Image (cartoon, one colour):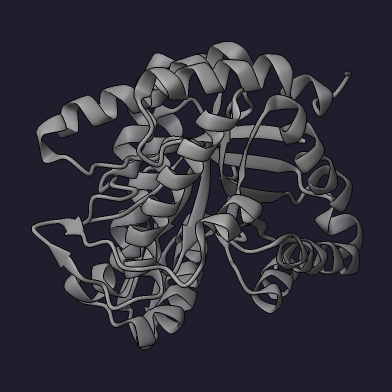
Length: 339
C-alpha cells in the first residue's frame, strides 16, 4: 500500500494569510517527497475556508518545481465548474510542467453552497459532470472534436498542445454503486468513508474490487485510493486533544457537505454534530504509531492501494510535520514493498 499526504488548507483565521497557508502546504510536500511518500494530493474548492484551493493546477506546477519525484494528485478537480475546452489545454500544460507526475482526480463537487454560487445547481451536477468527463476524454484522445449535448455545443476543434502521453484519471465516488460503475469504465477510484465506520469502508472497497475483477486484464492497472483524517499522537492527552479538534473541524465541514451551507465572509459556520466526540474518535485514525499499523492493516488486506492522509484539521504546522516524519519512520515501512 502506498501513502499520500493531502495538502489540505484549513483557514479558520484570516489573519494567518493565504501566503502562509500555501507556504505550509509546500513545506509538507517537500518533506513528503524527501521521506519517500508516493504522492501528495490537492483539492479544488472555492469561496470557503476549508480545503481552500481555487487553483489546483497552478499549485501542482509549483509543487513539482520544489520536489523531485513525488506524484501530484488533484483530489479532486471539480469538472462542472470548468469549460472543458479550456480545462483540457490547462491540464496538458500542467502535465508537461509537472514532468508528467500529475494524476487527474475528478469529481462532481460535494458542496451545494460552492456549486450554486458558481452557477451550477447540485441537482444538475451529476449530469453535467458526466458530460464534462466525456467531453474531456474526447478532447484529450482525438483531434477535431465537435459536440452537441445538453451542456456543450461546439464546432470541430483541437485542443493544443496535444497530450504527450496518457494522463491517468481518477474518479471520486462515495456510494458503492458509483464506485463499481466508475471502475467498470476503466477509471482509478478515490473514495473516503469520511467519518463512517469500518463496515462502510469495506463496502466501498468491495465495490471497487468487484468492478476491477469483472474487467479482467484490462483493469489490472487500476488503483483504489482511500482518504481519511489521520494523525499520530504519542500520549492519551494529545490524542484526545486532536480528536476534539477533528470533531470541531467536522462541525464546519458537515455544514457545507450535508448541512445548509451557512457561510459568512468566506468562513463556514460550525453547526452542532449528531455524532458524538466518542464516535468521531472511533471512526477516525488519530492514534499512536502502533495503533495506526493495526488500523491500516485491514485497509491493505481489503485491497486499498493508496492511503491519503489529511493531517490538517487545525493542527499547528510543526506538529503536522512531526506527524508526517513519524509516519514515514514508524508506520510506512510495515506496508511498503520490500518491507
